[in-house]
Length: 225
Image (cartoon, rainbow, N blue to C red):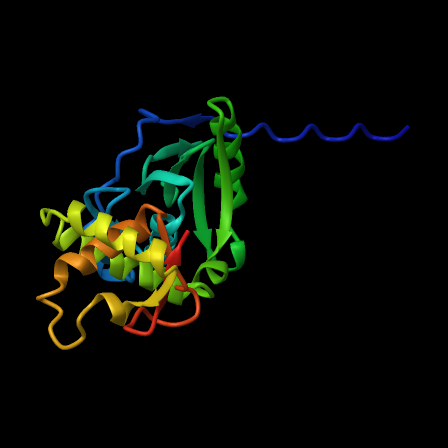
C-alpha cells in the first residue's frame, strides 16, 4: 500500500506593525558593513539611505520614471516566522503599488519573500524581486537622474516659473537643442535659473533628453516630449 504523501509545511506566519511605509533607520553596524550612501531625494523627499549601489541606482531610475509617484526605501519590517525581514522599496505608481527586493541575479530567500508576497497580496500590493544586474546595466541613466535630483534639491527655493515658460516657447519654435544652448558653459552661475528650469521641465516630463547612453553634459540633446 503506497505511503501517503507528506503534507506540505504551512507557511510561516507574517506580521507587521503597520503597512504605512516609513524608512527604517540603518544600524551603525550595517552602515559600516555595506555600501552605505545617503541622498536627499524628491519622490522620497527626505534624507534617503541606501545599503548598496544597486539600491541607490534603482532610486535614480524611480525618480526618472513618470509613472512613479513616490517611493520609500526600507519601508516595513516584517516578522516572518522567527525571522525579521525588511524589503528594499515600497513604490507607489499611478495605477498600482508594489514592494521590491533587490538581489544579485534575483536570488532572494524565498522563505522570506514568498510568505511576504502572499501577505501583501491581501492588501492589493504586488511584490517583485529585481536582479541587481538589471539595475546596474542602466547605471548611466540612473546616475544622470541622481545628478538632476541633487541639483533640484540644492536649488529647491529658486523660482523658475518665468524661465520655464520661456524655455517651452523656445522649444516650440526649435524642438531640439543641446544643454550647451541653454546653459552658459563659461558661467553656469549666471544661467543657473535656466538650468534649473530645464531640469524641472525634464523631471516633470515636459521635456525629454537622451540620458541612457552618456553622462549628462553640454552636448546632451533635449527636445519636447
